[in-house]
Image 1 (cartoon, rainbow, N blue to C red):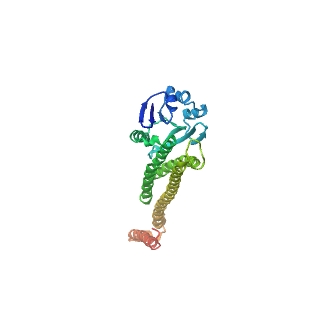
Image 2 (cartoon, helix red, strand yellow; image 1 turned 90 degrees about the vertical axis):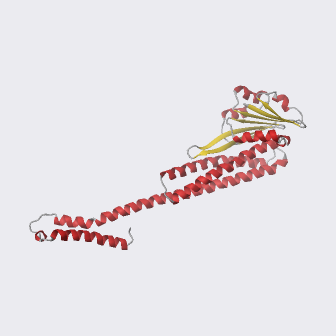
Length: 322
């Protein structure tokens, strides 16, 4: 599916559905063309070669859908591979969508193979506010990247909530579900950092280096995006450290519970040693044993056994062994 937004000064924004004569539209002086391709068919993908004449290597990167952030300067246009990230849930983890940009003087082509809510927002904004397109293709390029990066706020808010829940769990009644949640969140945070770090480097290049397709006035705006990515990366580090601490607390809690169980079993074993000892002596059935002829020997043996058990319990209690 192709949806395009075509801006002409004094005429506003026109929305074009499907394949059009993009070669002619892109060469109109003063015009700006944004072509967004979502799940393009082979016929629609042919537009990249036929109308825009992009380099085969760049088109190969688009078709292969390699989720690796990169930027290539082809002089006539700038090619950027970026990622859009969503947090689905504890079980599903992160959903990663590749987003490809072709930025030329007055044209921006974006290609992606999944739908996302940020494009609905950008479509609506482009239709109701022509300033998004009237300021130039490089400004539109910046606006889309800025929207993609702002989406990390909602992701990190959800992860922060999940981390807080984990902290409450490990301080309370930690169980195997808590352990699985910790490992799932750690997996998602590591995966998120693998995306954030190269994006941070690419945006740093956009804010430091001069690309012919990006005006110098936009450099401070890319620096602002870079600052956001640095903050998001720091947040992921903080969440990962909290999860590591929670994991240590969980293991300590499990070890303490195990020690408590072993302590109870040890005490129970110890208090039954004296009765076992007395029973083994009086159960030998020798004819010459003096205690066998005592009339009150049976109650005396019971009193001795229970008395030794109570004495040991009192001793253990004074030592605070349980």
